[in-house]
Image (tube, rainbow, N blue to C red; front, side, top):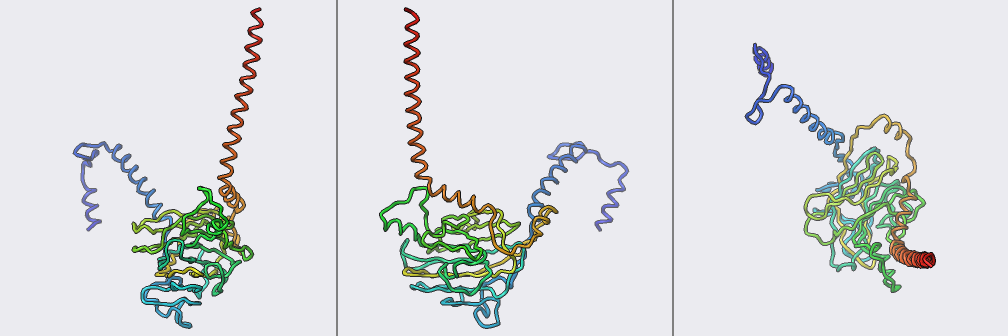
Length: 365
């Protein structure tokens, strides 16, 4: 039918060279120019939509009804410690003191570009800053290792994204009767990311500040609506976003280029409690494979196999954190020296003016 319709349309002996647009005739050249603009705009949006495609990888995903999770050999996921499966979630820790639990993938992931969407919930009886300690999402070489870093081992190899719910450094400073500067004080819970190479330790007392890539505050405790964490690794760029306001909108948390992560690591989720506690629940972990079009230059740059996790220009990131930590003192001394400089210039100006005025008066005598 379509071919016949086109044939009948082409059989007109006198084709029209103008088109009706909004009730008015439009010249053919203007029509094609208008159509070209519309086509170009639509292609721009189409390129944005189709530049990257995503595919759910079920073997690396965890969701209800959690069939076989934790049982030997019948699931892609393995439980550890105090973690347990219910009909509604995988509870990493109950709201009890000194507990830690984890769920780890049994299969190493060899995807080059990927995206992890985490549906989680943190809740408990403790009041603000009387709860702890937090949970983490991992992509690491090691798996099923208990430890102090949110239930995982220290000196890990790979990526950790932490939801830290207790301000250790702030409490330590308060105990010393000191105070944070307004620019360095953080609001907890706080989401941050770290890349370890097997020899870098997580500084628990300072809430991971010396080694963090970046982060954001995230008020995720005791919310009635769903909370989500988004981790994307594409073209050696790490992006973390959160959806915690119940508006189904992602909010930027950190975006770091030059992150080099090897393939063949394991995904996992862990949590820990100490003297303070919370329920740390994972409702789902959904991993998507991303297919991205790369230029020849990008392909050549990424041909080299990555064997050790690292971050380009990490020294600059740490320098920025150091400058942030000194910002209050720096502002004070900057203001002080600026004022002294102004006073000095005024004094010099007055001296010069008085000498000029005196010499001017002498010329009239």
